[in-house]
Length: 338
Image 1 (tube, helix red, strand yellow):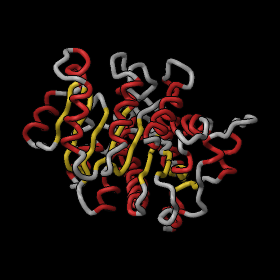
Image 2 (cartoon, helix red, strand yellow; image 1 turned 60 degrees about the vertical axis):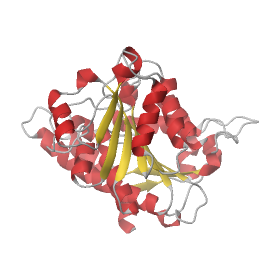
Image 3 (spheres, rainbow, N blue to C red; image 1 turned 45 degrees about the vertical axis):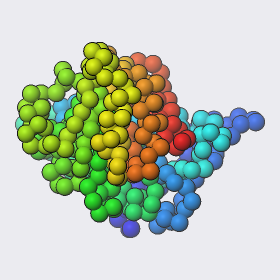
């Protein structure tokens, strides 16, 4: 556990108190959420959920994307701390653990020049270091009987979520990915576009369902590989749900549920899939924020759900002020308010 203590910046009430906007006659989420003195006390704590930030954007950069996802956690934290604490938002069900310490990797990444010949491989090596931290923390949380809620960073962190959960439970983990992309690219250097393919290759990922896949951003090679080599991968096209009316949103939910939810599974929400949401690859055509909330609310009720990850949000790219922060806060409370 000493290594985990080095890798995780544990929060106390004093850490976040300066971000809470107190008001007479009101109690804020940040005033009622739980904190712990040491990570070893997780197992015996009565709260069900463990909230953790992953402030990094190295995986996005390694995937030729735009930096910015490292700021999603700090932005979202301020929003979640300041929602109202009521019987409906249920702050008493949450432990605000803190954040994974990515400082060393971020400093090293800042010294890498993207135009250099091997820059992406160098960034990929740093992603592997973060993989290890995420994997070990998630494994510890899931083994303690809690459900981790992981916020921020690139979709590269799906690997650590899946590998950590699988090792804690001793079996493969199914996953439903609310995403415009497969993130099932080839097994080259580690980056935000191949977290799922690496998890599959290492034996951590079982059935995999991509909810809302965009045709325009999925190569023929990936379609071919999924069909010929990875029969466990299924998907529902965004265009079939929202454009061509070949299936309904509700039917796609049921298809994903039937494929993944009969055993332990995780939920990944890539904010790239939300229309006009600030993200690493913002889209002008995607699901609405309301539909995203409906998606998460639907699956949050399943007893086999073992983690949730909300990623790729980038406040720097948002169209409306605080859009990313408020969106993540809504999703967190939708998840815990069953």
